[in-house]
Length: 122
Image 1 (cartoon, rainbow, N blue to C red):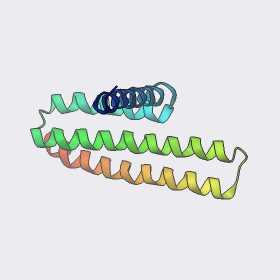
Image 2 (tube, rainbow, N blue to C red):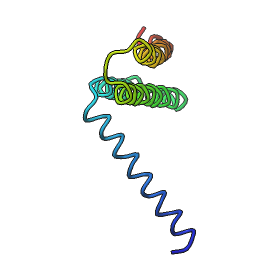
Image 3 (cartoon, one colour):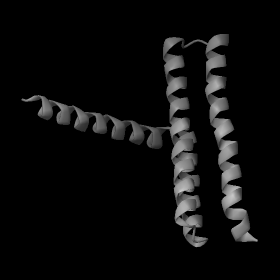
Image 4 (cartoon, one colour):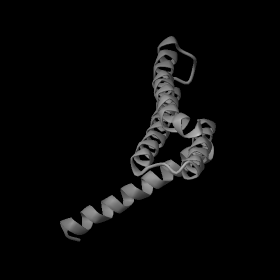
């Protein structure tokens, strides 16, 4: 095979791995299931309140980021548990820091949601 064919084949494989990871996240992680449920509810709310194109872009970006950050948090927790299965102060710190990042963005997401939806509801 030539270099272009190898490149394309590797990209297709990479996309397959990404789909597998997304499926595993959605099908096995409770926190991701909650985030996906919230994303679906907010999508319906977006249609109900007739979001502008800019508001849709913001909402989709925030939804994607919160799910992605939650996925990274899950990956960090899994890796930490693999490296050190027994409870350990430093591993706990790493997990808490990752969870804190999710929490900070979740607060920002609620604020963004409020900015978009509160004026439409009142």
